[in-house]
Image (tube, rainbow, N blue to C red; front, side, top):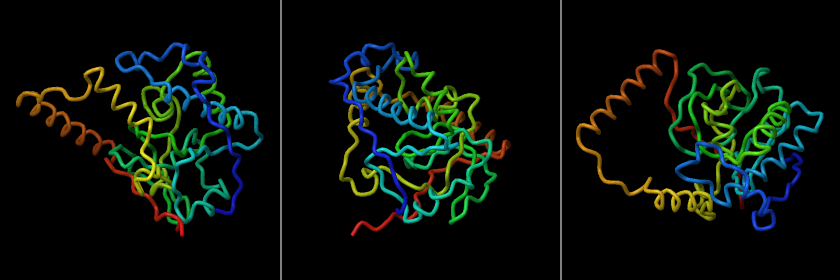
Length: 241
């Protein structure tokens, strides 16, 4: 991509058993975090520590299974496109429905910046400010929490200004070539099954109608607040041959 990266060694939970013993955030009461998720959090904490101590106003974090747009080097080589009020910019898409503000600001190279108004899974690629890195380090000093929940769950990131890059700059390889199935996703599904969160019986018709009515009401509310439901697309990826 024509830009330099600093590779940070991931945390191995087997070598740091004390991290597994830290309390977990209350949102994980029904389905506790797996050892891989906890190790993932502390791997990101290692990156946040570097950003928090650096002189640059922003730093970008990418997991090692990301596939990038062919324009990644051009965009990441200059951060003048980052809004002054941005605490975090999600550069990744997880190809799941989320909600964004309809107003768009050009980021150049065919990209736009929009406010992210709903959770968007994944923490494989994002940019954050130096102060936000410090805040995340403080928030997770004694408590384990899923990394993407901490950053992109509006309830947990209240007070932070979160943007989404559209189209996205990167995505996990599992979505592009199916070469690297996500261990975290497999463990999460297994944990949901064990806790009864998956495989439950079909809801009664009245419940399903009520749920659809709720979806319609949320859509109307989003429309009135100039918000839009979207699956964030991925910009054409860089050739690998």
